[in-house]
Image (cartoon, rainbow, N blue to C red; front, side):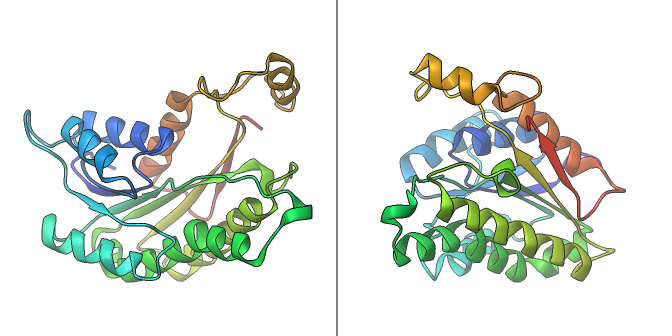
Length: 237
């Protein structure tokens, strides 16, 4: 697929979302950003604008709010009109130990990671069909290889995976839908316990964590992989 696409990046101010946005801007795509933090959005928008000195359009929205999909679509219509592709990179991944799990943990995490993204795809389906577009979503290797203390997050990512695989059938052949199931990434701010980090790294056959750049490479590859849909590419597992 040729660059120059209009790409919505959901969860744009996280490490992965911002990495994807920068990579797409560098290759000539036009990005529209959405996340919760206006200050971070403004800073990133200034980096990835379509022209020197310009800012990319963005929409501030909290995916935990029922109105978030409509807010994002309205912002798209007022800024760039339509989108061609969507990258779903929303976070976070809160700890939810099972012995303290609450209904609200499940409700909120499902809303952020599954309900809002699926409703947003529904609202933008006409754009995607017209553009013969692509959806690429970041999910988690823990859906099939679970780890402790994240039952709400992994439940939500599992729901997203199932929903998007169904949409790969619903939206074919005009729209392609693929996912990237991530292992553990290096996090310089959080990886403070060398012993724990070593134990976690050994979960991967490669014996190390991944980098943002490695994930971005796979996301961009799936945006361009015109003969792939309904796929879940595992990286770092």
